[in-house]
Image (tube, rainbow, N blue to C red; front, side, top):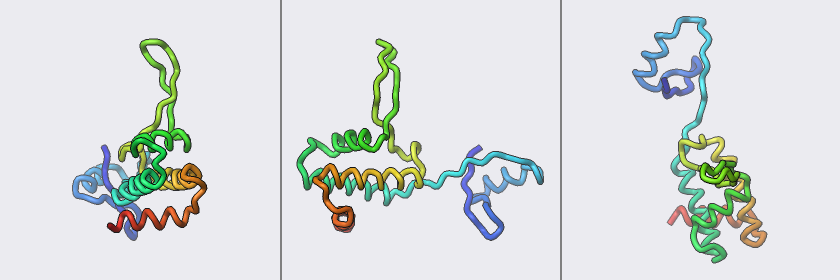
Length: 140
């Protein structure tokens, strides 16, 4: 069972009726395991792609934002190993930044690593200048 919760005065509370009903079925004192994930903020996701667009447009070094993203994932270590079934060869592929792959905290960490890497990749520009350019991009 997956349920949404919010932090209230008494601790975590179910965010909806279905979750509350489920929690009532758990006996007092029973130990349960809870996986806590803070959902991703779609505005933060948009800010990330604005960051990518600003660097792509300013440098002209990559054929597309997708190419830049692919290189960036390798640069910051968002990769995984897989075995090709046809040959048995082990290859490294970029990881996913899909909403189900990263919660908000993990995405924030990824964003900051990317910002630092992009500053280097774009010719050692200052991170404050890049942050400002992203804010300007998302405000238009």
